[in-house]
Length: 414
Ligand code: ATP
Ligand code: MG
Image (cartoon, rainbow, N blue to C red; front, side, top):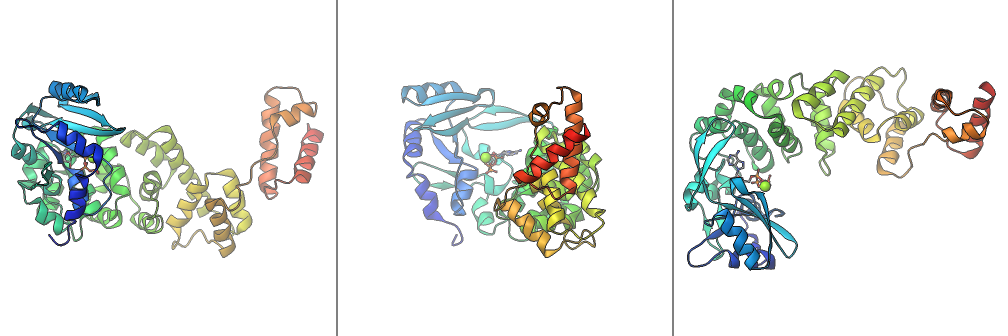
């Protein structure tokens, strides 16, 4: 396991709050281990932010023991056996060992158990089923270590069976592949995912949303979206067409700080109606929907802009729209015949994007018109809207001389 970081794994156990937690929850009879993502990420030498534990103890006993030790216990998902225990301000999820009794493709009926092997086998991928004891022993019942060393995402057991138990595992297969794998997806997993994909339809939108948005910003999102496109998954997930080229350009340029909603826009928004459909399908928030709409409108504007986009056009677009949306649109469409962006336009956008230059703000307020003698009422809004159009057309100036002149013109006209 030369490609894995044993040292980082053991140093998990040296974190004082976690060590303290494990000491409290391990005695001669009860056993508690670190499981899942924390073990996986430590072995990969990646940052470990969330630590989940699995225990032989029952939920009520977890709460009781936490309290006796002076820890706060929050019954986060007590019916599933999960308690959040807070040690020195750090939250840890402790879950009673489980076995699946019944599955229907989206929910599982589980029994609490005392067997770490059965608990590992109900997990999805071999790399997600490792556990680490307080004594530093790494437990691997599913060959997860060799898959992790090879950076390979494989289902535990038969992929078809595992997917039919919970169709979300199709999404998770691609999400974990995108985040952790090195080569192509495991052929058996990929074939099973393809064959079972109609099962995605029975999942809740929230669960798909969660996995898809994570996939979009995973390290190898570009390759993986390519695989999804090639194998016909995208129409099932997005309910419409996808623009792989645009997604690729955005993913190649924002890798340092990827934002799921902008990557989604580049991939799946071509016209404004796409935003509405995606809001519905993926249960997007109002803010996310607003961003997709901004992207769609800017896309349509720049595609039909009569002249190459120079610094002045960019200034105007930035003043009137979301700058991050504008940035995404221009990155996504770079390499397409339109729009044409002048170097000056690019530089201007870069200044707005980084905050080196403030985005121009319309300088008049309703109060300015009232002070100028216009009675309060709907007329104010109309005049302001007209003035705003003039301001946009005249270069979005923000200096006081211009603002005074604009106000004078509005008042004269009223
Ligand atoms: P991340 O860093 O993305 O949170 P994670 O490994 O913690 O990675 P979670 O989605 O938080 O992933 O799930 C925690 C663990 O629970 C997984 O590592 C896996 O063992 C198990 N798990 C979660 N969802 C499923 C599922 N649908 N089917 C089987 N096992 C699952
Ligand atoms: Mg997690």
